[in-house]
Image 1 (cartoon, one colour):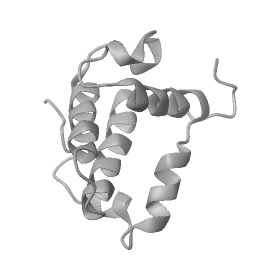
Image 2 (image 1 turned 90 degrees about the vertical axis):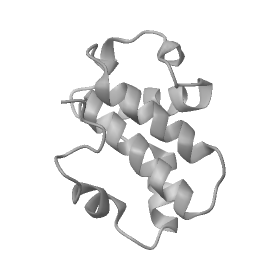
Image 3 (image 1 turned 90 degrees about the horizontal axis):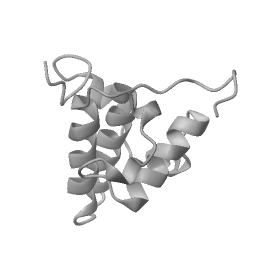
Amino acid sequence: MQSPDIKFMNNEEVAQILYNISIMLEMQGVEFKPAAYSKAARVIGSMEEDINSVKDLDSIPGVGESIAKKIKELIDTGKLKYYEELKKKVPVDIEDLTSMSTGTFFFNSS
């Protein structure tokens, strides 16, 4: 359960972080993982069900065990250590870069 001082993460915020991870991994030349993170971001970004109410995160199409653990960390703490570490390794401000898209989220289904 989240403590009161933890930022609530909605579907769009979780999806945006997963998408940012996919971009950073691609920039680093990592194979396969960027596509997995991008797919998970698209699915979560278009889900009608609140990500916080999903009991079995790896039951979400495109979300495997590893990504499910990262989503759980985001939901439980409002942060993701893996994401923070990646941001230190990438020479651009990924959040500014991805916010330049049309709308606030790349995979907005509307």
